[in-house]
Image (cartoon, one colour):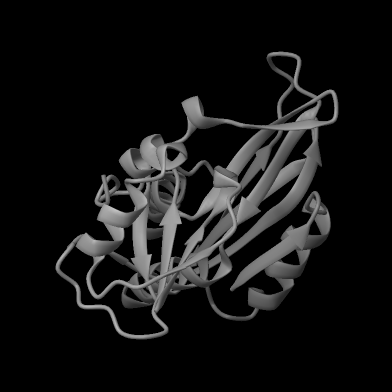
Length: 145
Length: 73
């Protein structure tokens, strides 16, 4: 399940909702990752653009991979502005046993950072500044150069 | 005609081009100096599927997307 939200994420509500959705699914492990906007370099917050069609197909490919291992992924991400100490990203893995979930949350979040079509901007004095230096080229970039 | 859209921070309106391969799209876009650095760091999708080949044949109405470096989370 992929959820996209305008603005920051309501972390307690989302984590509880996901817990309740799977409470009787017989998963032995529920491992959430919550990403929070930190105060650094005098930013006022972050802002995000995303491209939903490719984000969905990327997520669906991961969900299929999880299913092969008896696991399930859930993810929520913000679109637009997210201020300091608010959350912009939650990912979670449910699986029958802990080892699959622990490994998958690591692989999933790393691939998310490298591949998910989401663009980050620093918010400074009301302006959005693309965080190019913290961004990663998607595999195969430069094809048209 | 194919449509080229520029995603995220590129901040450029989409354009329609007369091209039958990605190689032709590349040659046309290279003429725009504003796009030089983006062409070097963008991934390319045809009809919302990422591609790694310039030889893909394009048909009328295809959508080509340029995806700059990403940083979700």
